[in-house]
Length: 356
Image 1: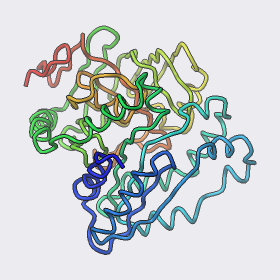
Image 2: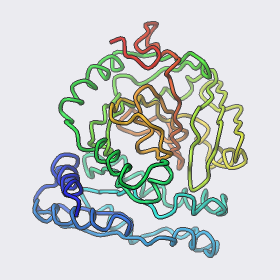
Image 3: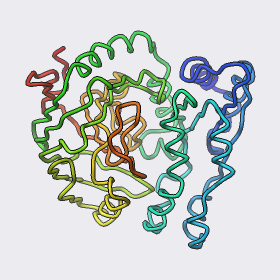
């Protein structure tokens, strides 16, 4: 086993979710992360917790959306809900055998299933202090290929982004967080964007590897009806195996009134119609991780790139002040390397460089 795998497992258990004696800890992942799952299992036991494995196999999700009938798509997973609601910690491992296995899947089935299981996902994400969850990236061949790296290069990239001095980086992020906590209006202006919004700045949060690993973002909830303007995202966004490229959104009073994409525009429109709140924005995030400087087609890493922002269509986290409930939460990333972030009339970032 790569010693970095053990170190990452220790970081997750001891730092990210600080497992305590007698706590139930769900470990959810696929067999691509077998070594990591074993290491996490061992560390949870050492911490006095009770590891609960929720494993999947490559290809099962594809088979579900290909063969599942209407009553199966609509069935609520009571067993999974019971496990989640009786656990105190949740570790979700991001590793895949095929990043595009759902490319040809029925988008309508995906949308319906997302609504069905949303109450469980919402509990996992928004149930602090009853549950603390972390999503953690782990290197595998499919994600390395998506990032256009060899597996060895991708391993160095992932472990480099995750295994760093989080106290030191956290201190730098706190300075950025402090500025947003005092702010009430954000203006994103530059090539490809002219978008204004009010934000619940006082409830902004810095993720220092405690919500996600890697961490490295400051995120907040916009005031629901406050977004006005437009934005064109530089990077493609892969969701449910479908790559949506050149996404351009126009907002009026918070709602998306026009949505375009050069690829999979129909899928974009279906996601926006998932429910009545999917057309609103639930999150504004600012990338702050210095070890992530390359787009990899993996949102867990890409939303942390320094000099980027991301908007999440749909649900707002309750810890950020809420304001929008939806079964959708779709983060889309934009480079700000030639643009400005203005808070309450003052430029705090220009061309990706902080002015704080």
